[in-house]
Length: 152
Image (cartoon, rainbow, N blue to C red; front, side):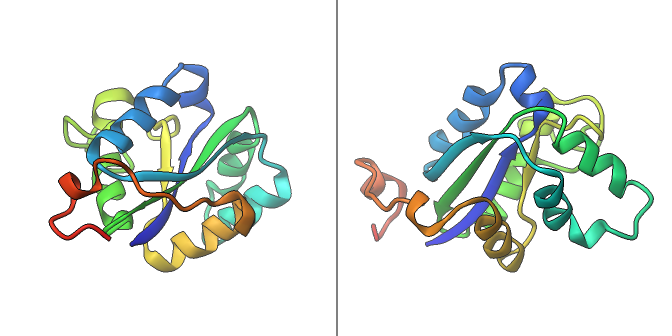
């Protein structure tokens, strides 16, 4: 099983969309193995968005993610990075498919409700930024035999 990071951004929290986002993840058959609400520090935000450091929008990204609480989750499942990215939809809500989180719930690229890791390597790095090993739990969902042909 693969793990990925999902963040319900300040706009998603302020709009009361935490439950909607988490519910979609769980209904898909993915497991939430870590979950917390945090206020992201400037230092953590800069480390999280390090690949964008030289881009003109870097400062804006950091300011926004630190402006209000976020909900961070470690999501686990088969091919979790790709599945969650597909569920989240394109970065620009105008290009996101209907049925995706951004396609259904967002209007603006700067307020697009969620962040999801874009690769297994990014997922590992991002999960380690936001969670200590003791904050990630392992358990078996009761419906796993119905989600996966061969349950892990």
